[in-house]
Each structure stands twice: as C-alpha cells, then as structure tokens.
Length: 190
Image (cartoon, rainbow, N blue to C red; front, side, top):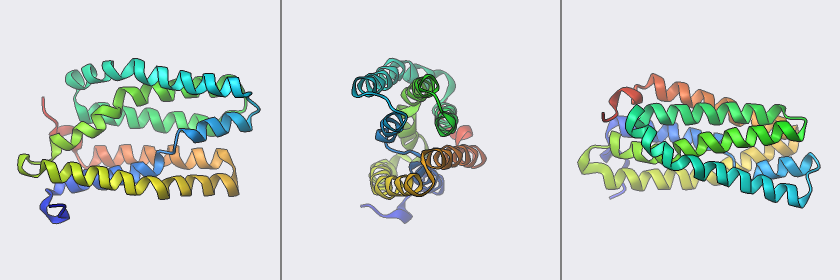
C-alpha cells in the first residue's frame, strides 16, 4: 500500500529533498529554448540536443561504476552539485560557446548521477518498504514535475531565462546541502 507513514524516517526525508530537487530540475526543453532565444538555427538546436544526449549516454555507464566505487549518496550529491553549477552557468551565458560548454557539463554530470538518484531509494528504504518507497519515488517526482515546469516557465516569462536558470541552479545547491546535512551519504551501502 502507498502509505506515507509506512516509510522509515530516512526514506521520507530523502523523498522530501528529492521533491524539492525536482523543482530545480527543469525540463531539458528549456535549454533548447535558451538556445533559440540566443539565435541558434534549427540545425544548431538539433546538434545541441544530440550533444546533450550523447554526453549523458556516454557517462551513464561510467556513473554506475563510480557509484560502486564512491557510493550512491556521494555520486548523487556530486551530480546535483554539477547540475546546480551548470544551471548557474546557463543563467549567465551570453554567447553560444558558453551555452555549448554549459550543456556539455550538464550532460556529463546528469549522465553520471541519474541512476544513483533512483538507486538511493533501495539504500535508504528498509527491505520491507522498498515497493512502497519506489511507488512514492515515482509518484512524488511525477507529480512535482508539472508544477516545477510551470514555476520555471513563469520565472522565465516574467523575469527572463537568466532568473529561471539562476533559481533552479540555486535550489539544486540548497538540495545538495540538505542531502548532505541529513546524513544520507553516511548511510549508503559499502
């Protein structure tokens, strides 16, 4: 059953931080909109999109190996830190070269850490609650994604792309601090 109180305290805290991080995680379509706003042609936008996905794919397998070596919590925090910094960089880009570099960095760190973020559920959830924990994980991320996109789009509409990316990057960094302060990195499996 999908009962919140059936989850352990550590699992609930991780899910709350994850929901907050979902509000920092804007749709990658906004990156393409940023490129469009900067005057990129359709071909350049398609190449930017392909580059983003190639960098993510190139590092995802290596991310699994890194998770085994360094731990899921540390890799997730590293990924969220990279995400936050790359979005802060996206908030400041004024030239296409800077956009390309920011997107490549974003793709690299996202590819490294996407799997570890999901795998943390199995680390922090007790064995008897894992099914419920994964159900809450996908429910929380899925339900948070829509208002997160609306919030990001609203910030972009009223204050510009820079403000939207700045907000998302800053919120991601706050989530890194919360994840670290709540001790998730120390509870991971060796």
